[in-house]
Image 1 (cartoon, rainbow, N blue to C red):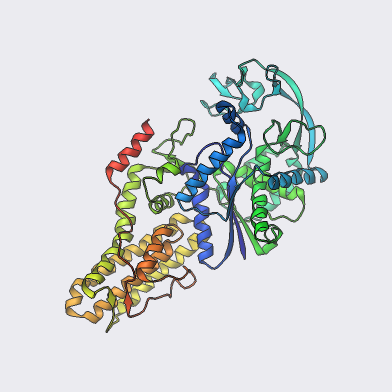
Image 2 (cartoon, rainbow, N blue to C red):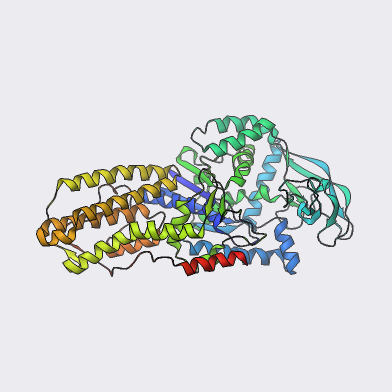
Amino acid sequence: MKYLVTSALPYANGPIHLGHIAGAYLPADIYVRFLRNSGEEALFICGTDEHGVPITLNAESQGINPEDVIKENHRVIQEGFDKIDINFDIFSGTHNDTHAAMSQHFFTKLSENGFIHEKEIEQLYCEHDKMFLPDRYVEGICPLCGYDGARGDQCDKCGNALNTLDLKEPKCKICSATPIVRTSKHWFLALDKLQSRLEEWLESKKGWKSNVKAFVKQWFERGLEPRGITRDLSWGVPVPVEGADGKVLYVWFDAPIGYLSFTKMLLDEQGKQWEEWWKGGDDVSLVHFIGKDNIVFHAIIWPAMLMGVDEGLKLPDEIPANEFLNLEGDKISTSRNYAIWVHEFLESFDSDIVRFYLARIAPETKDADFSFDGFKTSVNSELSATYGNFVNRNLAFINKFFDGELTGEFEDDKADDELWTSVNSEIDIILESYKTFNVRDALFHTMEIGRIANKYFDTMAPWALRKENKARCRQVLLNCVNLIDTIAVLMDPITPKSTAKVMAMLGQNGEISFADVKTRRIGENFKIAADVEILFHQIDQDSIDAEKKKLDN
């Protein structure tokens, strides 16, 4: 089995925050690491979503080109991913010829197969700027709550979605003139024609997360309707039909096609065929990691596009959508700058401890909350105390009392068998949890092995054994070395840098493998191979206070 794993494309209109990481990127990275450590072949695909109105507005406000906006934001987003050790096989973008050609091909095939039709619709038009106004180019008074400053697509005060034509006293955001109503021709995807096939397909996904199935069911019950897939805009993929001058494909239409075009770009460079992955049938599993705000696009619209093209392309096998991450009890808001920006936060904190805390509070079944005090407590009292301290206390003990090596006589005991029976039962749960996208459970049970390990060390009391029975003491310490190895292997998808450090100290420089994690053992004549270092430094209160202050500014 091969795995084609994607994360939702981050929008190239600003940096990414920890909410993005917790929802769609860290879970995917952890899953890919698990797959590869399990001996599976996987491609990890992502890139920036580089079209749409917010980017053009951003460019106009700065007096620069949209290309400059996406180039800078792509760089900053890539920097954030690099700092938190999320490693894609390709991290591309949607503004390129390969992606444009693939998107236009989708449009053409959908049209040829009878799933696209055109019609005239009413839109606001600015006579001063000589252009139809996309929804975010219009502001006015919300017809529902009366807020003066509502956008053409949504009111930020009451949170309701809006229709541009329903705004009271609309104004053009470019010149503040009052627009008029004109008709414009647009193209629509006939989702209604594909509803029965979509319902049948979704019904076959018995193991999907309940939040995905419940969300999609609501849409089916209301009945799918044709959805507009073009806009009057100069920035984007041109609509490939006559009479569509000045129109581009709607960003939601071309963005998911990026999964396919990026795969093609990656494999073209390697001299391989992208069709082996996207037309691989049951030999390939397609997994989309997204936040819950993307469910409709990935579980309804994107599968409908794939069905409508009718070229044997893979439909999603799994869509493990996560809920939202809040911040200190409040919703993250980029417009209010109420967020923790990844590229900045990782200047102050090590990537492994951030990955650990996000995995510990992962919003898998409900919204979660990032708390700075919780971050400090979890890292200091769990990660550092349970895992890091166990590594340090054992290896430091071996260095001090056994000159850094365990050689000579060893003495087993039935307590050792009981130890590994307990550990192996936890390993079974951990591996199944990784496989089924339950990172929180995988982490909890890995920390449980840490608790078992610390209890074993304290019960065996090697500080006394070294005086009473040195052979038994060596065996106890060797068991602890193997417990360190086991924990490090199991933690590799979550804290890869720390695992690499542990493997160096233990002299285990081969590939990490889950296949033998229950049986792999470091044998007698063990020698510490690198300087023993503290894995996780304690987070001090000053660092936490400094981060809280940033939110207040």
